[in-house]
Length: 235
View 1: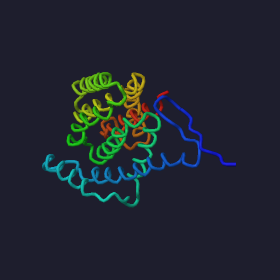
View 2: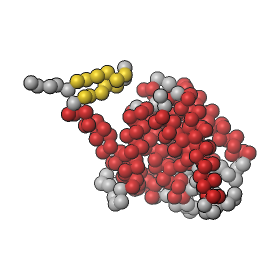
View 3: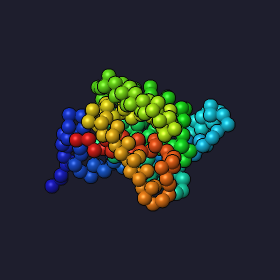
View 4: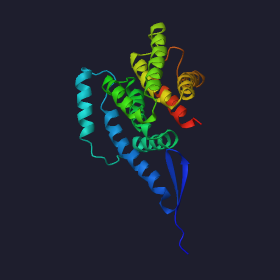
């Protein structure tokens, strides 16, 4: 007797295949993440902590990324992390958040290496993210969320400019857009989660005596990790 794959409606916007071909979509998504991670590796590695000319550096980084052959390097750290992030975000939140996942992974890598969030990535990401979020049907909420979180971080920057950079403020706008489009609950989780994770890391530095109260560290990766949790843990 022949048994045909069963198609079950998981939601009004998604279909889940139960059968031999059910692994194809996740496998393709992982492969896409690996390829995107190879480009993210090149982009992240092209930035320095204190460049002589930030604009020239940005142009060189984009050109190097465009010339990249999408074959994983060794060890494939960037590629695997990007694949995991992209797969989980798309699985939990949907395809409109794919760009946010890939760009966020690249920005986290750049900030961790250089303590910078380059404008050449963050600023163009605003219109790109706005376009990719249109299928969510919540462009107004995304815009409001981006403005609100950027305003919150802008206020923190004005209060303690030594502890927070303008790059973090620009990143907050992007995170606010993506998470607000998913829902206000996700927005709150991202806003609070980034602060909480950063504080926990600071406590860890103190407890392990790897730093003191004046030790500086990149905050962007913790903001992005909070956004990742918000998108993946939403109901």
